[in-house]
Length: 104
Image 1 (cartoon, rainbow, N blue to C red):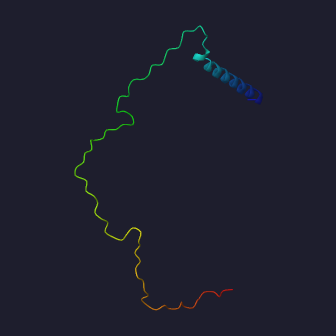
Image 2: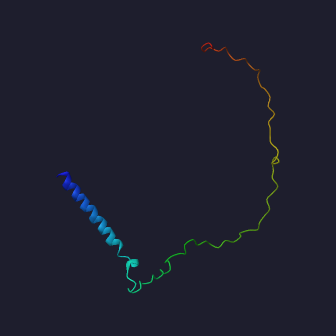
């Protein structure tokens, strides 16, 4: 197929598509003439057949026993810290001689 025929067919297809899109957009309510009957009103949908959205079913809560105050905290004060008494258990030994390459 020559390039002229191919180009002509593609151009005609593009024009036909643009025409079909224009016709499809002209079939809306806004394109009706002013003497046309009014469009039907939209009726609100009925109630949702189920639980109310955002609300759940929760069992009734009741207190099972009396409220007892907490006992005093047994332990160090919150602002103090515990530091173990550290002491050295054996003498410090010098490190062995370095056996790697000589430093520069």
